[in-house]
Amino acid sequence: MATGILPLVAGNFTRLAQFYVNSEKTYEGTIHFGFSTDTYDAEGEPTSEPQIANLRAAEIEATAARFRGVIQQTPPPFSAKKIKGVAAYKLARKQKEVILHPVEVEIKEFDLLGVEADRVHFRAHVSSGTYMRSVAHDMGKALGCGAHLESLRRTTVAEFGLSDAHTLEELAGVAGKLRGEDGSNREPAISLSKERKPWTVGETGLAPEEWKNAISATTTDDEVRGFRGANNSQLNAPSGQTTEPLDAYFIHPRKLLPHMPAVTADEATAARIRAGRTVNLPDLSRARQVKVFSGQRDLIAIATRVAGTLFHAKIVLCG
Image 1: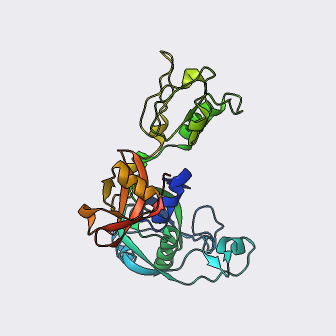
Image 2 (image 1 turned 90 degrees about the vertical axis):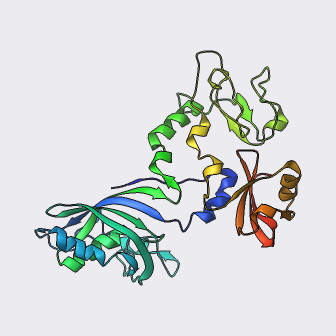
C-alpha cells in the first residue's frame, strides 16, 4: 500500500542520521471516501458503514484548504507514537485503549491532482511527523462519509528523490553477485581500503593485510571490474567481464546535506580535524556548521563554529 523512497545510512555515515530525523517529505497518494478504518488506511478493518460518496471538486477543495498550513493533528492509533514508553500500535493490536493527543505539524503543500466519484488523488509536502493517514481520516469525518488512505508513495525525503533510489530487487541482485549463486558467502578476493594507496591484488587475490580496514568485497577476481574505492580508483577485471560499480548504489558525499557549506581541507587541516583539534576556516565565518572534505569524495567531518572563524569537528566520519 505504501511505497517510495527510504534513505539508508551505513558504516560511519550512520552518524549523519541525526540530520535526517526531522526531514520534510513529499507524498503522492489516493484517499478513498465512503468508510473509515481502524488503521486509517486500506489495510485496516472498517469502522463505519459503507456509503456512497459522490464527491464534488469544489467541496473537496474547500475541505482540503482546512488542512494546509500549521495544524493540530492527532496521530493514528496504529502508529509508532509512544504511550508511557509503549508504541501505540502495540496497544492497538491488543485492542487496548489508545489515547493520543494532537501535535503541531505543517502541511506546506496539499494539491489535489484529481477528483473522482469516491476518490481523491493528491500531492503533499509536509513537515516531519505528519501522517497523511490522519489527513484522510479527518477529511472523511469533515465530509461526514468516512475516508481512509488507499495508497501512498513517498517521493522525496530531505534532499533525496526517487531518481536517487534503487529498488529492493536491484539491491538483491547485487547482493546475490557478492554472495554467490548458492547464497553462500564467497571467499574474499580483494579488500578495498580508504587509505590513499594504489589498489593491489596479490598472488592469492588478497590485498595486503594492513589495507583491509574498510570494505571487504566477497567477489572473485574475474568480477573485480567496476568496484571503486574511496579515492575513486578503478579496479580492472579480465577483458569482457564486468560487474556494476558499487558507487552507483550510494549518494555521492558532496550531495549530502546541501544546506551546509563545504570546504576541502589540506592535509594539515585534515590531520588537526581527525585529532579533534580546532581549525580556522576564515571563508566560512557566518556558517554554523560545515562539511569538511579531504579530496573530492572523502567527507571526514561535520564541523561546528565555536567562535569567529574557529570550527571544531563535532562529528568525525573518517579516522
